[in-house]
Image 1 (tube, rainbow, N blue to C red):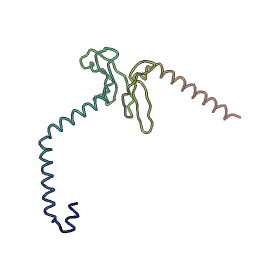
Image 2: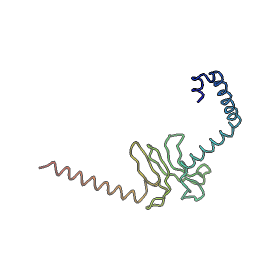
Image 3: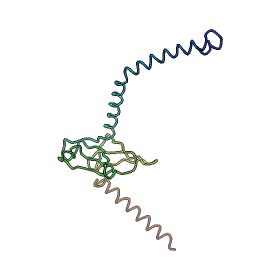
Image 4: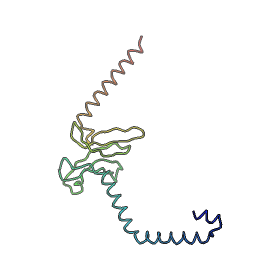
Length: 162
């Protein structure tokens, strides 16, 4: 509206700029006064986000620790570990896939009752439990996959010899 008033000659540019400057200065002053509060709220929100994405529930071994997604400072590899590890009271760990984004799911594995996670790597996403190396359900899946591969290999080998 003010731009149209300038074009029509009802007001001049300097008055509009001065009015805008006063409005911006009051907004900036209010922002500066609340800067610490805004920063605290942002930090709290970020901490809640990291807690939701890193914590997987209670530890099945010690019962009072929290399982978290951790990255080793020494090797750079990520894994699930108990929060009581630093105290020396629990040594529960689970390996994780090293590639892809990991998101905790709100369900447990039907085979071993461990927390489920979703792994997104590239365009592919899959769900697995944190106990994926020892899970009986995964072992059954791997056996079925091996059987399918061996059948396919036998089929390919048999089909190439006339």
